[in-house]
Length: 272
Image (tube, rainbow, N blue to C red):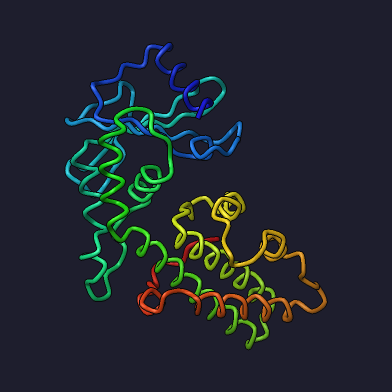
């Protein structure tokens, strides 16, 4: 939090004009207390009316209005990405992931990456100002189905990768099967962490941080890290490792609430 405060103070000292904001909050590793001297800090400025950051470019979003002002600057040797959203845009994003929407048959997640990261930062980032407004939006987000949408997406990605691994193994394409199993494992772990409210699957390089934060009963950190780093892979018997990982994935998927497993969503395949 102190690191983020220093960055915001430096922005102010450098003369960055800011409007009367309903709220300001931050996301990224620093905002979650994870020290990273090169990671980008995401600063969200929420205003009642559209406001353009001087020198910013319009980032397209499927909302009304259809863009947010975005600006990337260097402050105190850190990269800071500022985006300016209207309160109505934030409310419209949350309206896309209500429980009513989730109950629609075959409903797919309707958030683009920029919107998902906004919700993630709202729920897991740090508040700079406008704590009352942010608290209200967090209550709405928590009452909605954002968690269910991202969990079912990760489950769908995991199931697809498991199928790929088994098919490739049966076809004798063992190297591809290893990579598919590795991918399936990542998505399965993401689903468990998301179920615990620990979001961040767009940054798989931070999965170990999230695993430590969530303190899941899925496995010990040592067990998780062994599979994450493929430490048990015998290059002379890679099929054994694939079978081990696939078994783990299938057993872990089966521990999820049944209604989420049934609703697992197969979308465009994501990387791990």
